[in-house]
Amino acid sequence: VNILGCGRRNAISEETRKQWPGNSIPNFKKSKEAVEQLEELTNRLAPTFSFAEVRFGRKAVRQHILDTLNERRRRVRQGYDFTKEVGTGNCPRGMMRICNINSAINL
Image (tube, rainbow, N blue to C red):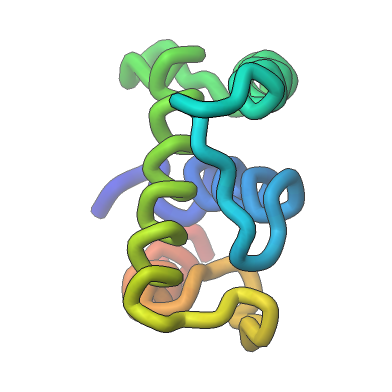
């Protein structure tokens, strides 16, 4: 089980969704403003969510932000509407089983 699964990585995903809510996901190749927002978010989250012991540093935080946005972009292309998202606690949709396993381990 991934130690970072529902802990740090999920918190990074949550902050990413707060920064860019809904279906409007920035394209970093076309917008300097979006790149600046990405760097700002990365710099804000890295001190809190970095975990040097497993090499989860600033670059990994930035990559997880990008992975979260890319997955959301893929799902929007498939027709998912994030403006009507149903809350599932701290676990993203489709990840409930993994999050429940991690929660049970942390008890």
